[in-house]
Amino acid sequence: MQDLAGCRIVVEGLSLQDEVTERLAQLFPQAKVKDRRQRPSHGYRAVHLIAPVQGRQVEVQVRTSLQEAWAGAVESLSDFLGVDFKHGEEKPGEPWLEALQLAADYLETIEREERSLERLGQSRWRGMSHVELTGYRKGQFSAVMALVPYIRKLSG
Image 1 (cartoon, rainbow, N blue to C red):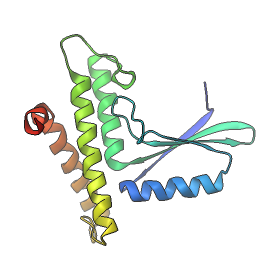
Image 2: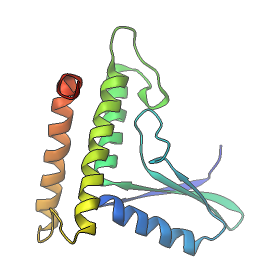
Image 3: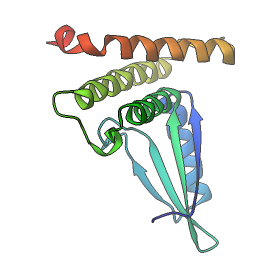
Image 4: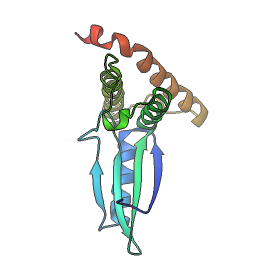
């Protein structure tokens, strides 16, 4: 067991994820940062900051809303099917891991495109209320998950 306490921060977009991670690293200079965006685990992406606090290890996960939605879907699907997708388990003849990986890759593409637009001073969600933004994100996530069976055909 690595940590004794943990929490999760969910933010909108990669830029804010970077900013929050940077601020946490400043608050906890001895913390170790594991950027699972650079080295995803079976599609899982997030940033983990593990900090010593009063002699104990505390883990803070920083996820975007799309990373959070994907991780939640994987956990729900794992529970429903009784398969530990999170750790690379798969049932023979059921290519769920590939489909989940493809979905994660497409969600990352959406987030990278949005970060590029932000750098140009543009934003898809500028002026949206929190409720509108949540609906927009749910729509993006649902669309990607619905397209997963067809992604290989579309990209090939």
